[in-house]
Length: 366
Image (cartoon, rainbow, N blue to C red; front, side, top):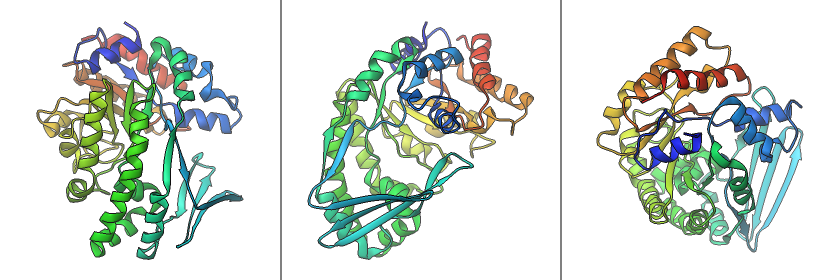
C-alpha cells in the first residue's frame, strides 16, 4: 500500500498492511529556507512532496487556511521595525495594535503585544468582528491535490474556536482569564460575534478541495481546563465536526501540549483524529495511558514521537528505543497514526526522519 492508502484505510476504520507514518515537516522546511538551504518556493513546489517521498514519510498539508478575511470600514496598517512585525486596526471606536517578534535562534516569531490588552478593548474587537467577512481562497488546495498523489492527503484549516483564537493569538491567557471572570456577559457577547464571523470561514473550509479538515486549536490542558472547555469550546467543535462529517470529510484537532486535563473531553467531541499527541517524557502521559483516557471514543490517536527526538538532544539509543516501543503499541489495533508531535524542529536530522520509515517497515506490519 502507499502512504495515502494506509491513512485512508485507518480513517475509514479499516486495517492497512503497515502502520501509517506521517510527519509535519513545515517548520523544519521553513528554517531550511531561511538558512538558504532550500529555495524560497520550496514548500509550494513539487520538490516538497518529493522530499517527503525521499524521506519515506506521509504528507498532510499544514498551515493553510482556504479563506481570506476582509475587515470593512476599518483601516488596517502593517509595518516592520527590525525583527518586530506590527499590525494596527483603526476603527471609529478606537484602535488595537499587536506586535510579533521574530526570534532567529528558533526561526519563528512570538507575540509581544496583543490586540486585546484589557476590557477597554472589548467593544473595539467586537466591532472589528462585526465588520469581518471571508471569501474562499482555494487555489493552493487545488494545487496540492495535483501534487500530493500517493504521498498523502490534502488538509486545510478551519478557524480556531473563538475562545482559543483569543487565547493563542489576540489576547493571551492573562487577559482572557481576567475578562472572562470579571465581565462574563461582555466576554460571551464578543465570542458570539466572533463565532458568527468564523462560521462563514468554517463553511468555506468545509466546501474547499480539502479531504481532511483541522481545527488548529494548539491546545494544551495547563492553559485550558475542563471548565473553560465546556463553557467556550465544546459547542463550536461539536457543531463543526458534525458538519465536516456530513460533508463526507474527516475532522482533526491539533492538540500539541499537555494531555491529561482535556484528552477525555476532546475524545468525546467526535473528531476523526486527535492529532500531534505528545507523550512522555516530553508530554505528561505515557502512550500506554492514552487508550484508557479516551475511553470508548473511536477517535484515531495520531502522534507519538516528540519533535526533540529528531535532534541530537536525544541519544541515538533513546530515539531507537522510543520509536520501537511506540510502534509496538500502535500495531496492536488499527486506531493509530505514527506522527511527529508536533513538528520536526529546525535542528532536525534527516537520517532520523528516514530511520522512522525504516523502523516502520521492519516492525510496523499489523
